[in-house]
Amino acid sequence: MYGPAEAVIEAVYHLNRFLSFGWSEELDRARDHLWSVVDHRVGSGDLWARWIASHLLELLDDLAARSLYTLLPDGTPPAVARTFALSDPAVPTLWPSQRKLLHLEHGNPLDPATSRSLISVPTSAGKPLMAQLVVCSHLARSPGRVIYVSPLRSLGREMRQALRARLRLLGRRLAAEQPDFPAADRDTDIAAGLEILTPERLMHALRHDPVQTLQDVGLIVIDEAHQMAQDRRGFLLEGMLAYCQVHPAAPRMVLLSAAIGNRAALATWLAPDLAEGHVVFSDDWRGPRRLHGMLSPKYISADVVRTPRKASKNHPGTTRATVPVAMRMSLRPTATARPTELVTGPLGTRSFEEYRSFDPACSACRVPHCPECGRCACTSRVNERLCPGCFIKHPPAMFADGDRCLDCS
Image (cartoon, rainbow, N blue to C red):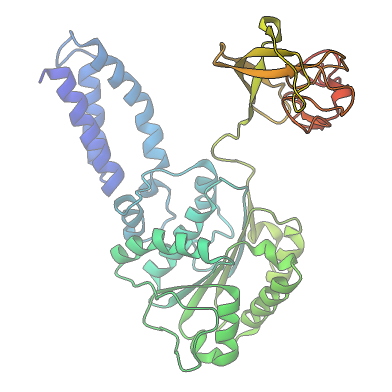
């Protein structure tokens, strides 16, 4: 292998070791290898290697700044970062909202001194990973237990699958999954470091034996905390949190939600003596960009081919129309942007039956309606149609002059 390509591979190897183990000397070695390619020290004939090395140099400092080894607060055991970097799925870097959470000076949920915390971020902002960071940081610092409350068993299984390997690297154990209402003689697994429960299961355990249920519990994480606004489960969640609030050895509590509206009121209820900024963490950043789109057929009515046919009792039309069909894709990058339309060439044809007498043409296929039944041969539902401009269904009269409704035309 030639010098520049080998140097790039060596740089990637050392960069991966830095992101996996946090060794700063590995980052310096990766930078040296990349500079040796850019400034021709290992050869000047491989332009592709130079191009890759220059881009990696641009990314190097950014990746280092996003690494868990760089971002974790002072006093956090290095095993926490190693747990996320080496387990599957690996987390070498963090998203902006997650980095902002770790940079909090007051009310940082990873700080053992933070007794109450509310994390409110949008969907796709990395909320599950924030919860995993809080749980693993607590278990790495304290020998006690953590209870994770998930409203849905499916969400609980996802969290269980994500944390199983991470807890193994920390030397802690995950409790076995239990039904919401187990047998009365089944005791709490106090030897396990983490227990993932539904609200019904935790409330049942508190009624059965509150002392053993909260024994050695130092942290309770409640996912989807906005469900306290529901009628039945909301009363259950609020009662459970109220009981934990007044418990003599009250554990730390971290609430997570993507759709909570009364953050200030909830923060006051959780910690009346603290300011809202010391309890609530919120951020508007969202991860993957949402792209709204609609895929629909486009009938090329200008190229319609009509052939005569013999009428029958069930098919009174005397003309068959064959229309070429293309595919139309309407994309809207943001909620306020105007959709962009992409149309393919003809992909096939579709045949319809035409009649002697005509009504206004069908808004979908441009073939006239039957004057007797008011239906089109392509579909029996022509009352409404979805506009590719506003994505709202309108009656056919709204499409008088084109494919889009009159509001979008």
